Amino acid sequence: MGYELLIKLCDCSEPVERTVLVPNNITFKRLADIINLVFGWNNNPHHSFVFLDQPKIITSSEDQYRKIKEANALGQSKPKCSVSRSQSIIIDRYFEEPHRIRYYYGENPVWEHDLEVIAVREDYLELYPKLLDFTGENVCCEAKGVTYFNELTYYKQNKIENEDFKELKAQPPMNLNLVNIYLQAGFIRRVLKEKKKEKEI
Image (cartoon, rainbow, N blue to C red; front, side, top):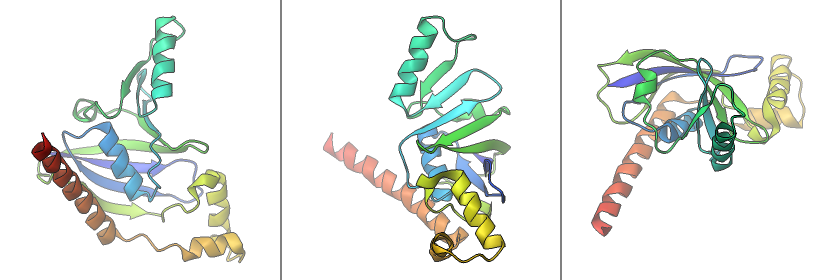
């Protein structure tokens, strides 16, 4: 079983979207790794999944986790915000029913993505994720933020040549087949790593 997800990069002047099939029984940390790969992010370890329809945050940030726990304990959160670590929470119980979820990647700048579960796919039997479709190229220069990315998009639309636009043109185009090879290879690497750990025990 798996979940078909539509993930949209927020605040872009042109749509940047990915439709991805992910297997069930994976953690939010693993989901973050998948999202980072299909958007071409540099895999910054900082990420959070914020539920917009309930006070719930799943995060990789120990600092954010601690601050929310402290605010809850002191009664500063009204209502209390549930917070969990992304490496220990499985996606299934949150994806079987519709939720409004926003994925935050990186820090300074933070990139925002809207995440929607399009369908629960009982027919998906693979243990690795698969990119089904995409709109828009990957972001280059992620450290400069969405405003800079929109400037590059403007240069591209209006055929304005400058150093920044050259950097955008030099980036290899999005390739669905190549991304899927990386996704499968990542799964195989993880399996081999786990088997190696089992032998060492």
